[in-house]
Image 1 (cartoon, helix red, strand yellow):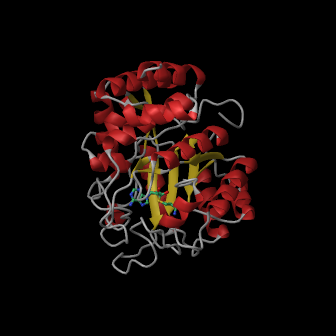
Image 2 (tube, protein in one colour; image 1 turned 180 degrees about the vertical axis):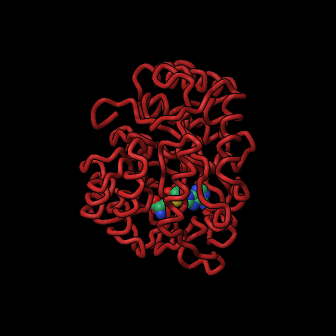
Image 3 (tube, protein in one colour; image 1 turned 120 degrees about the horizontal axis):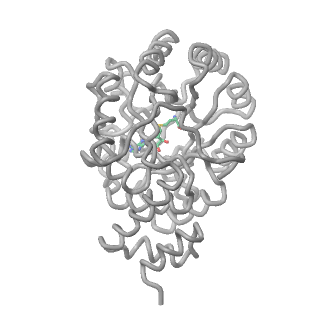
Length: 353
Ligand code: SAH
């Protein structure tokens, strides 16, 4: 009979576990097991990335969205959301400020806002790359046709974040309007990878109706897909959505999954997300100590930050970019890590890892 220590050691050695063992591990972890799991995840992350924490400057450039995802505060049917779009100059300004603060990756994230046509997105990407050729540009703007993704890549975009949210079709339907399907999400992810992006997928932890079985499906899907980046954070309800009364995901579950993901994907770029920092004041630090290696401080102008509300209670909505940058540096120093001024590419030689 294996115990959880054996399971963790096998997971580290093989970078996977048989499904039944993984299920047992996830459902029977004691606090002691969890400490052992985190220590292993830290050792693996440090073998590839040392004590470095990569910075991404997040620019939430529009909260208009044509979709109606049931969990999300900027879903189109939320009449209480105050909608905004940043102008091209405002976005370039965020990048210039971010550059001076040491950011070398800019993440343009937004709702699915068709005001931003392919041409406009390409102009943004080219503009940022012209100004800051040594920086990476990441897009996180949802589902588009393959030709659009190709145009973004040709314009110079380096990375694309598109969480799969849940790989189980039944669960996917419970979280999204009928117009969105897991089949199209998969199509997007494989197009992005074929085109040459560094691709990120991921899911919320503790989303409504999620089961351990669904989470296992997500873990094995990601193992097969081999993304360069994996974004996970706790689900947090938003008062103006149908999921307002659903329970949030927990700190513990999120940390366990971060560590398991690190052991399954030793070189993956794995952020300690804002949502994790929202459910616990030291959530991001604990995420780093469970194997995460990326943080994404907010670079959006302070005037719009409280409008990009995906969930209730989001942190740092009153801060300036410089404050967030400094605060993050201090937080990382306190736990023995340091943020680096670099593009922070995945330590993956080939297209996958
Ligand atoms: N429109 C883009 C960006 C979405 S926001 C896209 O669809 O890819 C980025 C991520 O925030 C989403 O993928 C989702 O996983 C997460 N998110 C949305 N609502 C949330 C909530 N209520 N709690 C926690 N995370 C949430």
